Image (tube, helix red, strand yellow):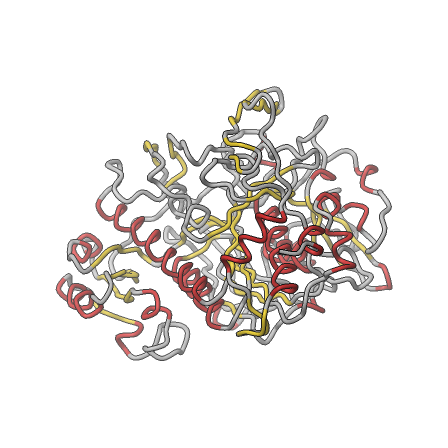
Length: 555
């Protein structure tokens, strides 16, 4: 699942405008590969037999311990989600085991997605960023919070520390001055082991920096997860910015590699863990790779590829259902492909890991963008400061549930960073990417340093549906804080109720007139068609999230 990558650089070509960088090409699994074999209800024993008959070796729960977690067989993720781990010893293993009627999907444990956000870089009008505002030192730059009334909601309903918001992403910099006060280190987990190279021997995460290639739970070498977490719950502490719900707790549930890719097993573990510890809401700003669209029986795909996509759809839906059954509200970025997800036609971005194996195939509405189109997930489209749907944001009358500010650098004359979203950034990641000089000063207008009170903290402008989703997650946290009752983890509110309240408090936003909205991207015109009425349409879903209304309304 790749993160929905922040967007500006993709705008120039209009080919990967999704809160996420382009999918990396998918690798063909080779001998001695670890697989996740999903079985039909009650068919675990049959699936294990099928694995052996196919020449494979069951691992994980079969050996008495879930691989990589140290948990027992009866409580491990595998049993809860209906799959077994197995090692295949030849390239025919997936098709052979997949032919058994007990098996519903087979996937190698490799990247299934990437983040959905894009850095806002190379902007000429830095002088425009010096707006003054009330509240936190950088509040004047937070047009997004003013748009949804979060600046005023913060004073009325900042959120309760009993509410846990899980960030399933590339990690959270728990040492950042504008994250640390709300960071729950005890509950945070890292389900990822860094992989220096991909399956083709190309650089992936780079050299390991921690023992066993497993980063501490307070580290984010990418920056995407920290930005998301900051938007949700940067505290009111006189430093930098404030999040939508500055009083709630942040839990790092890391499933993303340093490179931004997400592997299937880590994603399943993350969702299961969120349900088990009583997390109230999770933010998922990524989409499932290696397939941009997951099709169960696309004739362009080999049998192995079809089985892999079935496994992704099945496995992720089971994990999402499990988390939701435990009281977790599921928020997802819709995607940055500038695509009507109800009418997809061509996918030339898949498979996406490792790089170089993409092919062109026809797709239709039976193919799913996961998790945005998975059942039980609230998917969020992005708007710019004018309120228009962002040029990169995916849309669709069936797919868009809500809209929220995610930034749109092209929403006006020229390109400008102050039309994107400012949130916390890890200093280490910025230095590694050359965005900070030796003197500590930012090298471009996309990075901001705040040294209020003598402690310096860094912030970065990003845009994408990755940035929109955490605004909705923050509003959900406000609602749970207000209406939740004592429950696992602190307080609890049924996900169906949270969803209902999110829709009731959102500001209904009608389609533009004419409905075919024309975007001008560096002189290239493109038209997106908005369908539906003011109460539910393909651009804005049930409307723009409203933090102030969530802080004051009575059901």
